[in-house]
Image 1: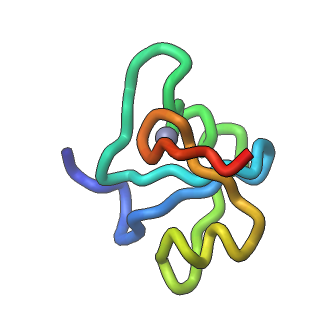
Image 2: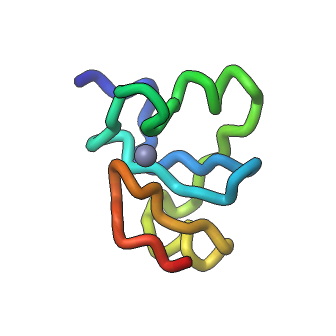
Image 3: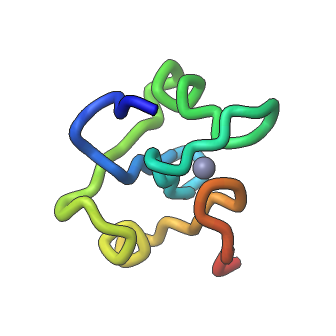
Length: 70
Ligand SMILES: [Zn+2]
């Protein structure tokens, strides 16, 4: 699957969840990346790492990352 951009991780600032775009799940009620972007809730991380997302308080998406910390 082609990436939307040069980032791997995308955060949903509305839900404080982080998604792995390399492992995006597109089923109903799964990652819903398009909806996140459309709603203006997409955020990216610098550096583009899961550790950075966690340090900003983001939790793993249960579909593409699993292992929710909540
Ligand atoms: Zn996800």
